[in-house]
Length: 518
Image 1 (cartoon, rainbow, N blue to C red):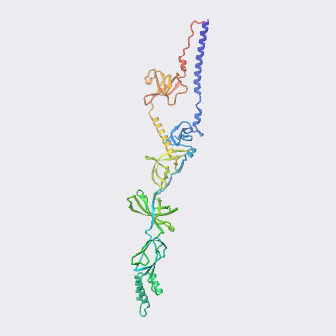
Image 2 (tube, rainbow, N blue to C red):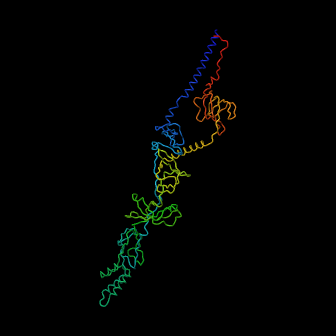
């Protein structure tokens, strides 16, 4: 009787233990099924507007991506969220206005206009050779007095330069005065002949009238400056004898001057006569002199490979003097109107030229463009943009890098999605081991693969194992062959009507002996 009681007690304990363990496993599974997701990660992954970022990154190191917000490990700043763009907007990135301000993103509009020549050159000021007057002696004589004694002396128009004594004038003037004093008969022809001899002697009409009005000889002549300027060459000295044709003075005018600018040979085609120019000189930093190209000389300097552009400038007040250094900017606006963008907006990669296009909603997209000419900080755009579009001037290198990374990921994803998928194979079995990205399952036959029952390892699902699957559970699974020949689990779920847990599979409840009486 005592043995029967002990046996009954053992059976009750075993049944209670088995029931308790089964209830524990069932409750654990149900709890895992109903357990809410990690709300902390979900809350952190969405911003105040409810948009979910694709990832976070440091704008200074755009190639490194993070799945959670936080502080950058590279710099003392918060990670920046990158949001998903619109469907079909591959390569575009979206950045909040606050981050744009932190990055210093500046934008400008695509405009139309005529492209300036954009040619700059240096040169030096020289005399205008078309504004030169030469003073020569017309008759033999002597210089009795000199009013201008040194080269580069400034002179004004009509200013006396020298006083010249002409002996040949004495005889001509005496003949004229003697013919006028003659009486009787017709002396008109004699007077006219004497007047003509004075004119042939080199006397001007004003000098002849002076002799007529005064009735005296005037053998001296005062030479005056025909134009204003500076004495470029002085060939007269007091007391010297001069002959007809002797150069006495060379006067260079200063009302206009030339600037001989050295234009590089490869830019000479952009400079044409008549083009407007602006000249600046270090001697007068606050002044800008305007003029035009008078001529492009048809000669190339073999040493410097430059051409001379002769520029004519108005020299009000005589501020510009020969020898001054000058910087010339050619401001030609020839040709038809074209699309223009600031040159700093164009990213030159060598293989292509890129402009970052700013779109609505804080989106930025790189656009391949075909640039044309360049001048005065503006670049012509032949293809890729339209007038009125908004482009990025600063920070475009970071945006282009990020857009390139996103575009590459998108293209890779599209390539993977377009690749042919392998067929799925279904099986059922028991989980023996989980670890190192692999799941070992003792499964039954798989008819589609003509496999018998065996124990083998499979690659874990890309999304990870379900939370309610553990070692010892019986599961139903789908597998697919990868390109490397290994098999990967695509989906897995526990078999609901199977006993749960390894302990239940291994535990055998003892049978009550027959013939036991109550």
